[in-house]
Structures are given as C-alpha cells and as structure tokens.
Length: 271
Image (cartoon, rainbow, N blue to C red; front, side, top):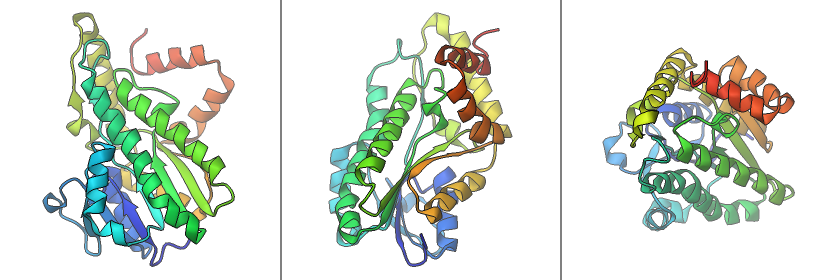
C-alpha cells in the first residue's frame, strides 16, 4: 500500500511506539490524525492533526468520535495502538483495574474497528493494525489484565482476517516484544499479597532490565510501517532476533507446559 496522501488514524500517538510510528508515517507522506485523550498536553510534530479520543470505554469513545472531525472523513489506515499496563497480583487487587485494561485495549479497539470498517469495505481498500503483544504467546506474570486484553485483541484480529479476506481490507496482528520505552513509568501498580511481594519484585526487575537492553521504539515502528506497506493480512512480530524469530518457533515445537516453565525462568520465578 502506498501511504502517500492516505489518511491514517493512530491511537496512543503521544509517546513511545505511537510517537515513533507517527514520525515514520509522516515521512511516507501520510495524512496522520494523532489521537490522545488530551491533545493539548502533547507537543505534536509538524503535519500531525491532533484529535481527542477517550478510549477508556466504548461509550466514551463513541462520544469522542461524534464530536471530532473523524466523523466527516474516511480512514484508510487504522492503527489501534493505545495501551497501558497494570502490574499487580490478580488475587489481591480490586477487579476494577482489570476492567479498565480490557476496556482500553480490547473493547474500545474493537469498537473503533467497527466504526471505520463500513467505509473501508465500501471503498474496497483499507488496513487495520491492531497492536497486541508477544505477551499473547509468553504472558507476563502479574500483568494478567494486559495479557488477557492483548490475547483477545489478537484473536479478534485473526477472526477479522477471515471475515474480510475478499473485501480488500488487510488486518495485521502486530506483536511487539520488549522495546526500550517509558512504558513502565506509566504502569498502574496494584496490590500484592504478602507471599507474592518477593516474586513481584523479581518480575519487575527483569522487565526493567530487558527493556533497557531492547530495541528503540523507532526500530519497532519501522517493522509496523513496513507491514502496512506490504498490504497483507497476517501476524507480524517485532523485537529482538530471539523474540521476533526464535521464540515463535519455540512455541510451535515445544509443549505448552515446557513453555510455561521457560517463561517462569525468564522472569526468575523458578531456579
């Protein structure tokens, strides 16, 4: 797909992967609408058209869409990138924290897909990118809401691939691994039971160390934009060579019980 003069809606555009992707889309000549809950607080690059979208629930998203310029235009490319983490023990934390995760990263992206799809289908062209995570394959301990939302989004994407196969709309399930960003700085912290605090600290330390050693957001954004330019539906993984190539192969060849043990060792939960 040639992105020149194509209209792109990018959620979660204000920082991290979203900001890096926005820069590369502009370089390709795209017309970029950068979505954020409060665009007035963001220093946007020249050429971006900020738009206020509240993704905290499908109902707030609907109100935002109806009040924005997006109600009057056709979107050629939708990138559902908005996300946030919550780090907590599932057992010890108020379930409201998981409801917020699923609304932001599953229910609202699904609603946004439903909003843009009719025009894409009527035009016989379009691309939807749903940014999930390699946590779909290797869940992160103490991030059960994040894992569940991203897994649901990935499954939803693959369903759309089949339903839209002959309608000219490509669907990309984009699964980044670790990358060097400020994601952990904005992580919501929940509760831990007394016997889980030590393990929680181990996992957090591994996450911080891995992110510091991982590729920059710009490298992940390159993979995302290349996937759009190819214009084909499918799963696209991004990250280090191990995460991008070896981990998926391992998951296909090794029993799930072994994968779970390996994942626990990765996060220092077993000796």
